[in-house]
Amino acid sequence: MTIDRVIKKFIDNNPTSDPEILRLAYDFAAEAHRGQFRKSGEPYIIHPLYVAYLLAEMKADLATITAGILHDVPEDTERTLEDLKKEFGTEVANLVKGITKLGKIKYRGLERYRENLKKMFLAMAMDVRVIFIKFCDRLHNMRTLDYLPEEKQQRIAKETLEIYAPIAGILGIWRLKWQLEDLCFKYLYPEEYHKLEYEYEVEQKAERNDFFNTIKKNITPILKDQKIQNEIEVRFKHLYSIYQKMKSKDRRFDEIYDVFALRVIVPAIDDCYKALGIIHTLWRPKPNRFKDYIAVPKPNGYRSLHTTIFGPEGKAVEFQIRTQEMHEESLYGLAAHWYYKAKNQGGMQPHWVKEIIDIQKEISDTNELIKNIKLDIFNDRIFVFSPKGDVFELSEQSTPIDFAYAVHTNIGNQATGAIVNDRLSKLDQELKNGDLVEIITEKGRQYPNRDWLKFAKTKRARDRIRQFAKKGPLENIKRFIPGMK
Ligand code: MN
Image 1 (cartoon, rainbow, N blue to C red):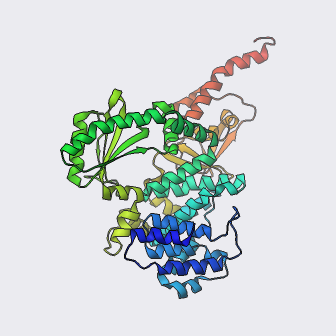
Image 2 (image 1 turned 45 degrees about the vertical axis):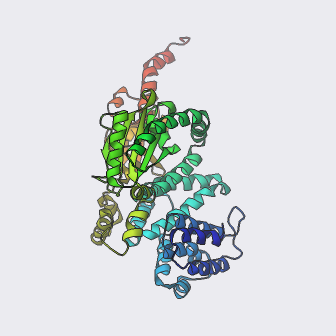
Image 3 (image 1 turned 60 degrees about the vertical axis):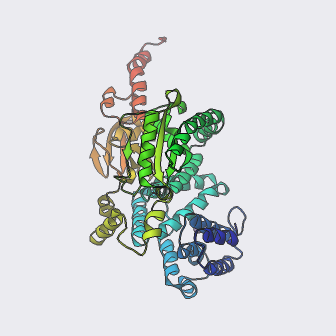
């Protein structure tokens, strides 16, 4: 990575701007980081340059990219925030200050975790640009994770998956969320990752291409007849989301039909509806799968028409129809939608940013604050902590018995009760996000109670209960009748 590439990327998106400050920031940062090296052996300055490049790619403004180049200076070098303020002005210095304040987000234990979330939300509420820099910082660190010891890789990948990726999601920066998730997936579940990658990239590629070419051949002439300018691109789901789908629905890879979607990008909103009409005339739509996110955008601002149809050979395929503007918004979220366009117009903040600021004014207690921030970042899953601070991801409405089996089969089999947030609890009590759970076990017991199936939610717990409860009584008898097989 070089400063010239960063500048070129910036100029591509801002032909009339003067990029001089980027070169100055580069000279300053290169001097400050002189003699420092990354774990990969490269000079340290490559890292901030990369971060700046990723920001330029996201169409960040000049101050944000400048801050990207300088983001590690106050913490890792002799030069201070004051120096930055003198050289580059208050706006840039404040952005760097925001990042420095966010600090190293570490992932250990319940309190720290909540503290991290709070930090992220507050920084976001102050100036969302800080979060973009932090995200690009993290993305580059994830891409260079190979150079770290394995234990560190695991920890960083875990905190990225559980803190950064969901926040990228609520900001609507899907491109970033996908990239982060796939990188985490690779490090956290290497076997599953490589298997899926092979099926996806190698085994099914040719067949998939044929299928989409057939669809394109059907639709392109009609759009042309109707004089609807269009671009059709195939969108593949990223590997981690396929993996999650397979897990939650308990399906094989080739049974997941909406792994691909076709994106139709047209000039104007009424073209979107026209294109939808054409698609529904060509193929039968799947009931209840049509979503009009143009008339009713998602809370994070996402807009598009979605429909699933039965295409060639009766195979279901999803279409996403949108304008170019909506397309950019969907890739860059707030970056395209709110901040970059409406920065000076005000009033375009998504409602939850305001909500956070308001709640924050009233509540200083961190736990209360997090409880009051009603964001759906945790959608249908919850995170539960062990007394050691390990985090377990469970489905919503899980109970201590689900947690017990998530920790270890033996803990599940021997569970008799639980302590949830320092209170004695029954095994069927519903757990909530952020609960701290300890399982009380009865050492001598070897078999689970079949009745637990009435409230166990996760597949893992249910499978284990069935497996062990079934053979339990018989195994018991065997123990008392020597020689019985
Ligand atoms: Mn950094």
